Structures are given as structure tokens and as C-alpha cells.
Image (cartoon, rainbow, N blue to C red; front, side, top):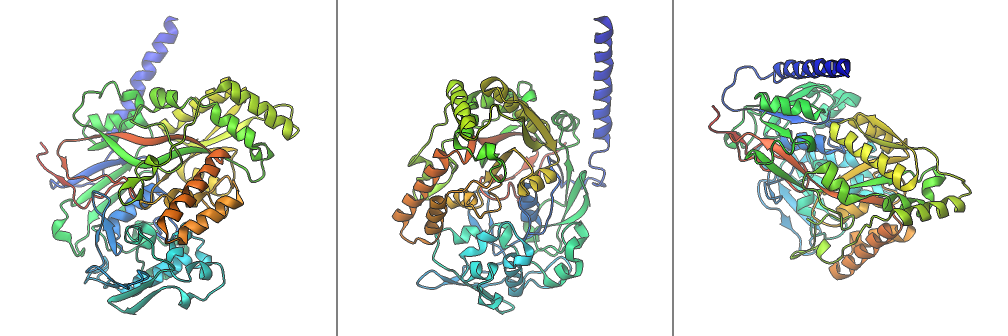
Length: 541
């Protein structure tokens, strides 16, 4: 016993020392502190900053701070004018929008033009781009037809009438179009820069130009990236920060050590440190529109094509225990696939209209598993691989699910903990049995969630398929009768929930720590996580 104790003590000292040494290297790009330098932590490496191809919240947040579309979202998730100089002229049928582009420059001094928007949007729609967010562009006239080879590029409803005038024609009037324009897929791109760098475009900081409040001045892959104030930004007078250093830290203990030693001004607060900071004035809740769920591979896996087996896995999860014992971050029980922050009508939230329960019932779970195995001719369940990220909190969740399925179903689970980028790639290519997935709202409408589970959507990683669901979502997308549309959305979600196309887990919130001298930092519920444009450092000692 004494030798074991001594070894553990030495190991603890070495671990603490390594964290201190790591802290000493943090923020090495910052140079001298000019009073407006902010140090942050990010959990993951951004896979790509090509706005036509980006798919994840890390990349979206960076893009939101270095590029601007026609609108940008303010701290209350409302669209405000950005590259649009004024509110557009809109036709009586709400289908033709004409925008005037403000006098603005790219970071290399060239003017931002309407052509930059036309090129970018049509590049998203080009089948060769293989954009996973392409269906967001289907609101444009002839967009889907061009993307699927049934129309020409010049037929698409976006056109630069001159350098300062952009005409946009919609397939149908939609209530959320202005909010949609704040999303990164609708950002402008410079054709000469994209073509100059080709496949390497946006994979390095120097392989881009910027028209937002900041430029990406440095990017050390899997380690850090840095923002610098954009001196050519049209509204630079209202940008207070000069430098933002962002280090990629996946380990919760290291992140807290960096925060406590003053090497970062922000850190995510993991469950293991919650008691220590339960009374801290620097703790805050990061509210999200983030829904989390398990996706089952229904492509080639006969095991998960069986509805009873999927239902068994869902019933085997004690979600309240997951929230109370593992997450401890203000997350809540889910009440459907659409998050509770989303509105169904201008004055009523969707979840106030319809709610679902997801019970924990191990006995029923075992019964359904046995029935499902019999239906597919199997004697016992195979070992199942659970795909997840390699962060501390992701691993903790994975271990929880592994134990739940072992105890409540008698199923053996092996955990595959990989980098964020690899998890995205494996999910996209169907290289998993079960994957822990999450989705946050891109715009304030139930379709921002329900669309991704159509059978032809790339984000439907497990390839669950229901023809009636597809039909309802397609109808709701173009239906201008909002009462009928709401009924179509409700019916579609019921099909998804009844068939356990996915297994809902929780509506996520997160906890963070922020130094009190960091002021005016809006975190968004919808779209990119946060904006740095309004942030300032005040009263730092």
C-alpha cells in the first residue's frame, strides 16, 4: 500500500508541474499587452474556414468574427445591417429582394462587391463543391434545380446587377430569410482568392482575405489561432480589441489551471470543477439551442435498422442521471428534436405546442432488444462501437453510455475517442455504429432541426429513412399557409420520435468562467457561438 501511495503522489506532482509548464507557453503570440488583448480557450481545431464547406460550430464562430455577410446577428440573435448598406427593397410578393452593398473593403484593400455574394452563393450550389449546407440555399429560385443538374447556373435567383446592387429571388416567401442571411453559408467570397489557392483555400490563415471586424493573423494547427483587429473594416471605430489569442485545450484540468494562473481570460467549466466554483462570480451559464442525441448507423448495419433495437437503446438511458451526475452544466431533459428556444409563430414557441417524454425503462428495453434480435435472426447483440470526441467531457459521457448499455441491456460497447475532425469525417462516411451527435439552430424556425433528418440530407449520418417524413418536410419548406405548415412540422417530428430515428439525450447548456474585466461579450443562442466585435477589456489590473 505504501508504495502505491508514494507512486500516486509523485505522479500528481509531475502532472501539476506539466500543467504549469503548459501554462507558461500559453499566449506566446500575444506580444506586449496593449490593454486590449483577450486570451481564450477553444476545445477543437477548426476543420475548414471555407464558408461554402464549413459545417461545425468552431469554424462558424471564427468565420462570424472575420467575415461579414449582408447581415450579422447582434447579441440578441437579431439580424442587423452589415455589408448591406440599408434595408432591402422587397417586392409585394416577398420573393424579390434588392440589396445595396455598403462601401467596404477586403483586408487586401479591394472593395467588397455584389459579385462576391453572387459568386459565393453559386459556388455553394455548384455540385462540384459538395457543400453539406447546400440545402440552405434551396430557398433561392432554381437553386435546387441547378444543384441537381436540372437548371443552369445563370438561372439561380442571385445576381449582381452592378458592383453595389445584389438582386435575390426566392422560390417562395419565407418568414426567416433575413435571419438566414446571418449564417456563414451566405458569406461572400472573392473568386480570385478561391481560385488562386484551390484545394488549399481557407486551410491556412494566409490563404484567405477578410472583410469582418478581425483578420486571422496566425493559425498553428491543433494548437492555437489568433485574431488581429482589421484596420480596413468599415466599422473599425467600434471594435475595441486589438488581439485575441485562442489556444486549443481539450483537457479540462489544463484549462482550469490556465485560467487560475491568469493565462486565459475564459475557460469552459467541467463538471469535475463545479463544486470548487459553485459560488464564483466569474461563473456563467452559456445558453444554447443545442440538442444532443445518439445516431445509429442504419446504412449497412441490420442491427440498427430494426426499430425495436433502436427503441431499446433509447429506453436504456437514464437521462436525468446523465444530466445530474455527468454533465452538471444546466442542461435539461429534451422534449423533442426541436429545441425549446425555437418559435413556431411570432409569439409562441414550438415546444409550448407539443412535447415528448423519453422514459427510462430497463425492463422494457431488454424486452424490445430480445424481440428485435429475434426479428433479424440474431441470438445476441454484437459488440457496438461508440464514436465520440477526444475531449475530457466527451469521454466522460461515452463512459456513462457504455455502462448504461452494459447494465441495462447487456450489450458490450467499445469507445472510439478521436479528434473532432476525424469524428466529423467518420460520421459523414458512415464509419460508426453509434455516434454522439449534436445540432444547434442555424435560424429561428423548426426546420433548422427537422430538415437535417430527411433521407437525402448529409447530416442524417445514420441514414434513417421515412418517405412520409421526407414528403412532410418538403411540403413545409414551401408552404406559405403557416397553420398548415405547423401541422406538417408536428407530424414529421412525431414520425421521427415514434420510430426512434435518433435517441434524444438532452438540451445542452454549458458553464464557463470569465474574468470580470471582460466586458460586453454576447453569446448567442442561435448560429455562431459568440461575437468579439463588441468585447472590451476594462479595469484589468
